[in-house]
Length: 286
Image (cartoon, rainbow, N blue to C red):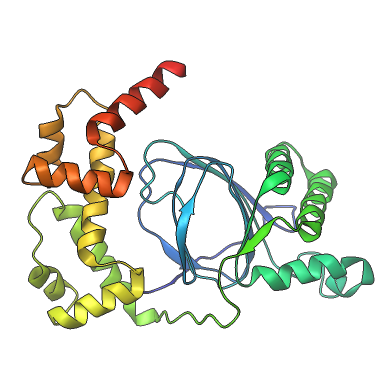
């Protein structure tokens, strides 16, 4: 899978970049960059693919990712609103020698752990979430001091999980960019139709066996599971409208209700009808 190299520049008059990202229906974006990245998920939940780590994240998630650690954009596949507050910075954001001073030892070790990706929990998550929100209201030296406070909290925390093993290797080649983009674009354009494995293998310019191995290696899931998940995510959006469940089934690319119900329950752990009831109930609370 091609890793896009995201180009990042600090904000004007600042040593780091702060982003308040709001989105709906994000495209698949597999990328890496030489900056460290603190991520706070303010709204939304979905799938997590960071390095070789596959999992799920929930609203309120706080993570610290190291440089050149490939990851997907968290907004991909999310149903409804998605919002993140992100800090992107280099390890020399305060100068070449600042990390070497004795007072920075804990933060220096935090940066070393971040190379493998870190997810924080408990009180650490709550404290950092609040400070990340406050960060968007600050400027100048106040903003820098607040960032240092965030790094201090993260460096002193024991409430964390390392996402990738220390011997992880990321086998992502630049020449795969065009191929993986063709695959995802083809699914986005044709998911309502019957997608034959022979056709998608031809799109990828691979034999069927080679394509199946390639896709599983790059995404850690079969192509069939990927297409079904894509269709179910689309069905979730349609279930928030007045469209009948049978119509949702066919509009999402399934050709019979029984298979649709079974697949929906596999991915969402509930039936389409129960999902709709839950969404409508939550809507009445807002």
